[in-house]
Length: 207
Image (cartoon, rainbow, N blue to C red; front, top):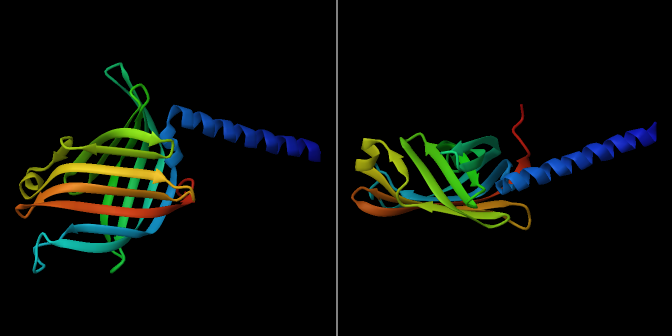
C-alpha cells in the first residue's frame, strides 16, 4: 500500500513538472506567473497644482501587489498567434497607506515574431501597448512612443509621449522592474519613473 502511494506521489509530481515545462515552451513569459509583493518601490511623479511647485519631482515610496496569471490565447489576422498572461497591479503610498495606482492589462508572447507585448490600461482614461523582446529567459523589455489611447482631457493636460519598461526575475527569485513614462504636463516634459523589487508570495490569489 505504501509503495502504491509513493508511486502516485511521484507520478503527480512528474506530471506537474511536465505541465510547467510545456507552459514555458508555449509562453516563456509564464515564468513571471505568480502573486508578487514588494515594499521597496519608488515613484517619481510630477507634483500636483495644489503644491507650491506643480510639475516638480515628487518622490513617493510605495508598496505594491502584482498578480500575473495565465490568460487567454488569440490569433490576429490569421497569422499572429498570441499567448497572454493577465496582469493586475495595485500600488499604495507608504506615507498614508492609500492606493494611488491601479492597472489592468496583459503580458503577451508573440511566438512567431519572438516579441513581447505589454498592453494595459489605468483608470485615468489612458491605455498603452508597448512592444519589445525577451532579452533572456527571465528578462524582457518593451517600449513605445506612439501606441497610446487617451481621453481628450489627458491629451490636453497630461499627454503620454513615451513608455518603456524592463522586468526580470533575479537569481534570488525576486522580481524587479523599472519603467519610465514620458509626459507632457503643466506645459513641460516630465519623466515619470517607477521601480520596485518584489517577492513571490503565492502561485495564484487565494479563493
